[in-house]
Length: 293
DNA sequence: CGAATGACCTGTGAGC
DNA sequence: TGCTCACAGGTCATTC
Image 1 (tube, rainbow, N blue to C red):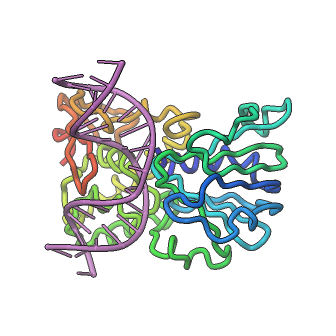
Image 2: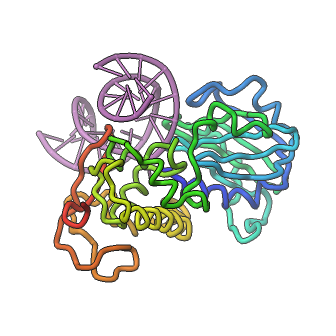
């Protein structure tokens, strides 16, 4: 589920019930997720104010007034459910569910936060590929989790010059290179497939062999697909971007490329091709062999 | 060194 | 209905 647009969408939904509020209680329902919780994990958060809720790559970062930052990764199946207490269900421009007594006691509900918004926020993750930890806010970029993470694709720093340098000499397929979090932070399997389609580039093309003049459209396609997804509320609950997929999950279906399509950066003509699925580095890749080369 | 592979978990849907 | 298998949007350690 969660790539950059999904994590950003979760962040936007949590801001009204977390940012500026106190964590009046925190409870863990087990000792670990993908990695063990740090020592006194819940106790170190209880009573602390969340001063800011940020995102870096696919990580959510809740800065606390203690000088520590709660780091949350949703893995493959992690979710943050928000329930508000009392009659009020609307906070800011968001409408949340009312909190039932049982919220947070489900099978894969692992961590429960209470805030004075007032709201209950439940972290649920059935596969447990997610993680939560606490790190020093000041030195977070030097932390093991973040020190090798590349630049944010929606920042100014991500441009043609950067991408050219990042891909230079790489013998790995462009699909794999774009998934590498050390180069670009936050792209995952879906958005890499969709961006390559929009840029008409074959996922099998070797990263270092891509001609210079194809990089500007690729940079544009990456930024555009991420922005489009965030604008649509990403995939899943609030969002509907899954209905805008051009290739992902569409194996055997006709290519959607058509003349002057708003979704397609470079598609000039309607395409009669069929979307194909291949496996690269152990992961599914979807593309149109007819219009991606 | 970079690149490929498998492991970590549980759930779901397809096919028999 | 119930079994088995393939697969799932991410990372990380290990191997070549």
